[in-house]
Structures are given as structure tokens and as C-alpha cells.
Length: 274
Image (cartoon, rainbow, N blue to C red):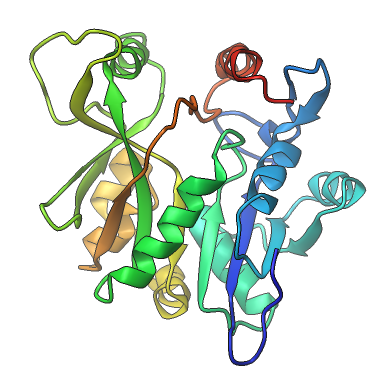
């Protein structure tokens, strides 16, 4: 990590973590065994992923839970305590940024359930927001190959909340995000064949003014139905830049359900990730 200065305010990465998840209570403290056989918690692996991003001024864990705070400080993370009233990770990032005194060029939300996020995803995201003067938030998207699309469709057929998909315009502006698989393709694809479906990677880069405004906006019907925090930006007419990133043979998945634990552990074993 680099160090911020008055002339170069830098990038703040916040790793929000909440213990009392309705869908998966205690998720940040779930242990995942790496290729070396060592088990590390989800929050530690997500924090480690954040610290690998180049050109970042500061990385903090933001939580409202003393168990997560004690654990995170134990593995060396800086922790910012936030209120229990934060309704999602974006609101927690806004509160953490304010608690730290603000002043950063942008704030990155690397969610605490995304330990497989490679550093180049976040580096591309930061560059993408800097390059799009009209965007107030940027988020990465990854083109699905046939195998990934099949996994997403299988989750939906079995009633599991799997990955989120994104659709965007020719200039990269987000049109919609959904837990359903969109767009509809109507055909099958070979495992390695590129598809027109994009997996939304749950990482965000915000301009501070938009992040500060976000908690004051009313939660709209689309955010309520989908349970996707980024839809509040779209429902309030704010531009989100979708930044396409490359997998580079790296597998990616978020931990959404208990059944995802063996899936992530298998991916880490296959990729040789400790």
C-alpha cells in the first residue's frame, strides 16, 4: 500500500463485515481451507485480497460486531466500528469514510464475502472510475463462459441465491443488475465458450460525494425486490460505470450460502491459493 498525502488523497479500501446476516449469520467468521491446508476466515481472506491491490492508501475492516473486531485486529487489520443501523455494505462504507475524516479521492468497497477477488479487478475498477468523469460509482463485470453461466442457472433452478448479473450500454453505463440470469440467451454454450451474460463482481468504487449522499436516499422498489444495494444509485438517476475485467484463468465466486464453502475451497485448491 502507498501512503496518502494532502496533495494525493489516495484510495481507501473498506471491507464491510456484518455478523447478523439474515441469510447466513456469522458468515465473516466462517473458515475456508486453502490449498496449503490452512483454514482462514472469510474476513481475513477478503482483507488479504484488499491488501494486495496496488496504489492504495489505506485498508480498513468496517463492522458493528465486537467478535469480528477482535478477530480482525488479531490478524493485523485496522478496524473501524460502525453502527448497527447500516443496512448494507455501501452504507457501512459511507459511515467508515466519515469516521476516518474523509478526504480520500475515492472509496472502494471490497465486500467481506469476496475472498477470491484478484487485485487486478480492483486496480481496473479504480482506473475505470478515474477515466469516466460522469460516473459516480464503478463496478467490475466478468464475461461468463459457458461453465459459469451453467452454474448461475443451476443455482436459480435450485432456488439458491447465487451470483448477480449485469447488463450495460455501449458506453459501459449500467442498465440493470439482477439475481436472475439476464439477459435471456435461449441456448446452450460449451464450457469454455464466451457468452453474452456478465457476472457482476461485488466490488464498488465510489466518489465520496455520491457515497455520502447514498444513506439519505429512499430505498426504492427495485432495491427492495432484488436485495441489491447498487440499484439505489440507478433508481436515483446516478451513473454506474461497468468495468469489464479479465479472469486470466482465475476462478471467481462469492460466498453467498453455506453450500458455497466447499465450492470456494475447491477453487482455491485448483488455483493453488493458500
